Length: 208
Length: 209
Ligand SMILES: [Zn+2]
Ligand SMILES: [Zn+2]
Image 1: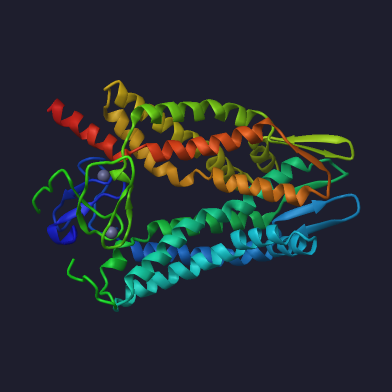
Image 2 (image 1 turned 135 degrees about the horizontal axis):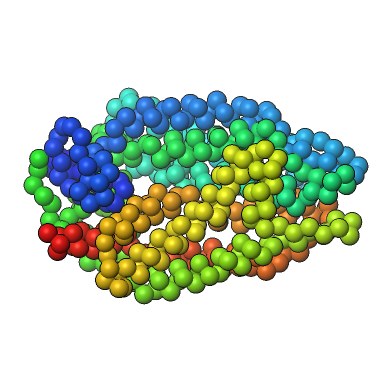
């Protein structure tokens, strides 16, 4: 039996299971945050964050994230050119790490959330266990996109030798930071219980 | 409104299935039979070890943040890096928004998490659980996701690889303290059990009325 069918709601902040009226606002008796059977407007909020992140993804990748200036050369570096640079300098494993964290993870995350949202909105039977695995994966990988931002801050503060050599952050970093935050919020506002409210394709134990 | 559930009844956080929560054991977290979600609230809570680990971590955090983590030399000119300097450099060059995020994820959130765990466990041991404990538990819930020391450690490795053909670098005290801090923070979060503490808050409230 589901909590919602017993008029019970599970608090997402403190984990309290409490009975609440079926309509109207109601605060969790334990932590006093609003208590709902399902997060209200989870789908539209998650869409809003996902779409904003997708828009931000364009400038984050087109604009340079760093200015590099050294004795013999001076150039601006975008996320992708940083990856290519690493790969050409025989640092393929690190190039892959950066590519995965900065490009693959945010892209996969945006697509994944969009797919989950569409699935939930269609309301057709799905393989719930599979959808759930995707949700958990998306939730887990999101934080790793912060990697490139940390790298910029380390490089910019270590390499500041004036005329000799310097690395500075550039406008792309701001856009990228916004993308990371927005994808984190997008995953956060999704309510996984919506997946389990759908019919299961393999209809195992649907009566639970 | 429905009937109030019994004390051992809970609902799965991820699929809403009603479950009877087993008594906490040291070995394993209970799993939801429907979606497989691990119920971290079923973990055994040891306030003493939570205090010990979080306090050690808070102490280690001081050298981890104050001492340089990397020493770098370019053509004989030295430079060193601490976490604050990194964020400060970004602030100074006008990237306050990126700087704020970095400070939040690497300094503020991990320290808040440790402080919350320490103070809550302390109030548990001293039997002084009260409304402040409840506030700290809420704060802990909202900050946990933003502590990203693990990601930060990986980004240090990436930066070092990027720097290797530019100049010479050396890992210094701060770096090793940071690794210890990461391990201890992870241990403190695993030893802690917010459900047990929320229960204590509720018991305290009931006793007062
Ligand atoms: Zn609550
Ligand atoms: Zn479940």
